[in-house]
Length: 142
Image (cartoon, rainbow, N blue to C red):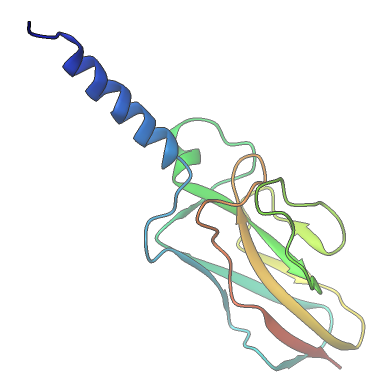
């Protein structure tokens, strides 16, 4: 007996695969700092620029298909332990949300040594899977 379920099963598998990869950046995608390097000595306030390759930038809360191919930056300042990567990124003075899709921020820090790291979040502020996160850099504020 011939089954008519074969096309239906294929459609289900396609939909499941699209759901699993909905917020999945492609291999080689990355976020990084522009114009500031690990060990930089800066005066405060200072501007920090953010780069991204292989994925897009869109404001938080974006709806529609673009939300599957883009996110928005979060700047982690002096964060020793990463937040839960399966939950929304916290919103406080150490987790700066760039909700409007900004690609730079002015940071005002006291004199001393500080760490900076970028973490890309989706429309609900949750990290993508796999996570798009920059290297952590250290800056010294004069």
